[in-house]
Length: 255
Ligand code: BO1
Ligand code: ZN
Image (tube, rainbow, N blue to C red; front, side, top):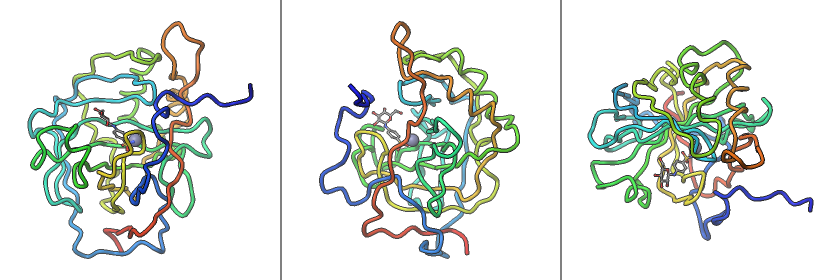
C-alpha cells in the first residue's frame, strides 16, 4: 500500500556498481569546454531503411534496417561511421519536465534519442552495447511551440500502438526532419539510460531544440505502459534521473 510499483524495465539494477560514466547528466553550459577540433556531424539517412513503429512498454521506438551502411552518421566526435538502429523519445506527464538531460538544470518537456552503433568495429548491435565506443546517441530536446509537420507523421501512428507490444509497419520515414538545423552540439562519454545501463555511449546533444505543439505532446501521453487487457497506465515520466558527472568533461562544438 502506498508504494509505487517499479516499471518492469527497472526490475534490473537501478545503478551500475562502480559506474563512472552514467547518463543522463545536467549540462552546465559555463563548464562545457569548446573543442575547436570537433568536426561537424554529418547525417545521411535513407528513408526506406525505416521498418516499423512499436510500443515496447517504456517508449515508442521507430526501428531501422541496420544490416548495411544505409542510414549513417559520421564526423562530430566520432572516429568511425555509426549505423542508425532506432529512435525513441522520453517525456513527462506535464510540460515542466520529461527530458533526460538538462541544460543549466532546465528540463524540456521531451527528448528524442537517435541510437546508432559502430558497425565498423563490432559485428552486431548487441556486441557494440558492451563496448566503450560501441554506440552513439544523438539527443534532441523538444520544446513547446509551433506544430511540427515531420513529428505529426509519427503522432498519427500512435493510436494504433497504444498498448505495450503493439507494432505497425512504418516503412518510409526520414528522421533527419527531427534534427534541428543549427550544427552546434555538446558531447560527452556516457551510458544507456535504461538497463543494461552499459557505459558504451558517445552522447551528442544538440544545442537547439525542435518545437512541437501541445497536441503532439498530449498524443505521446495517451500511450500506455500496459498491455491490452491490463489496468491502463499512461506512458508518462519515462526518463531516468540525473546522474553525477564524476570525472568527465562536456565538450562543445561551438564558442
Ligand atoms: S538510450 O538511448 O540511452 N535511452 C537507450 C537505452 C537502452 C537501449 C537503447 C538506447 N537499449 C537497447 C537494448 C537492446 C535492444 C535495443 C533496441 O535497445 O540494449 O537489447 O536491442 O533497439
Ligand atoms: Zn533514450
